[in-house]
Length: 238
Image 1 (spheres, one colour):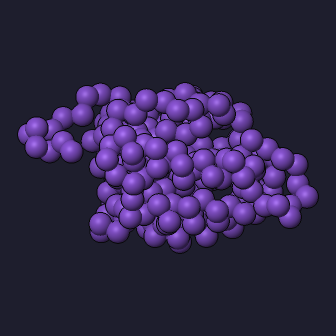
Image 2 (cartoon, one colour; image 1 turned 180 degrees about the vertical axis):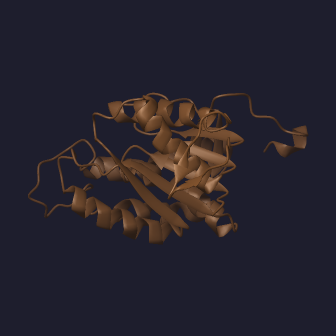
């Protein structure tokens, strides 16, 4: 199955938080989008891997993505090595995306930066014909995405470009809040974490609104690039 966009997240909820509005927008535009979670988030303070599985499925339905898979890498302990790269290469070759979205270059959680580099390296290697992979016993063709973009997460990194998500901010928020065990719940007896406060939940929207303000829209999501963004005409820029 070929996808237009394949979004990777180190943990379930990374994609929703970092680029959920963009995913929802592209789905609404008729693009086929998939999500690959690297881990099940089993080290998360609140909830369990099993509750995260359910929440991730609910969020995927809200976003309208075509497919969501989980590679079950070890939360907190996966590394950027041949073993892990090959698993991602299999996913890239399976879905043949034109665009890959992945974690931020640098962030508070160590898995985010690790996941960012791991996915980026695997996308390059996936285009090498001498790296042989098979899925369900069938050999795979080489495939390299045209672009790899990194969504912005906890840290306020300076974006290289921003996507207007004004018409899809409500879908983004609904997909994020599908992770009921992770975010603000005044009735929860679970330990507090940096992302379980009301301030954090509110920040998802006000950060998007502030970035929207800077590009002349209501809400936006920011991305970083690995190479220059090219346009055919100055009029392609907004």
